[in-house]
Image (cartoon, rainbow, N blue to C red; front, side, top):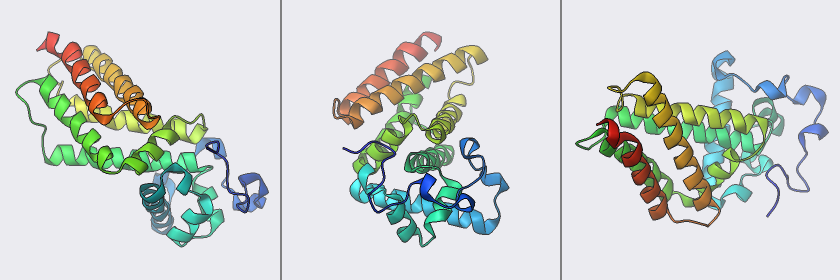
Length: 221
């Protein structure tokens, strides 16, 4: 299995592109709020292409040249937006969790207690990932990368997860709520890493999350 940032032999690395091909301030990433509508459209096509390629072939299938072809953009356009495929996949994971958050708002969680409602939200997340196992494993692998851009994506994902739990735990003291959601985020993340590496099943992921919800939330109910 190739390292996370390795590209195909025929694929130019960022340092092989012309200086004006690569975005400035690589470490800071691109803030979508600063992009024009056309630039946002191209960026979205890149993310959609990563979804498509990842769903079909997993992490290894998301090669930058193939992303460019699928998105119908120049290869340099990718590197103006994302310094690596891990950063691109992390952005895709951020969008995925944002969509899940929006669905939770539209269809409130089920359950007679805060713990059961939180379990319902997390089960929905796991069910969605289970339906696309290759894509899910690719997204998780990218989030676990030391790539600076992917690290930022992981922070965005955690914020989305926290926002989904805020309303469920709104009756709790703010610091208690923050602590519970932080621990749940760690359990969720570590469980998914075990699944992506073949050391666990999704059934086991669900069991770990359910147990964590009851242990952390039930004492405050």
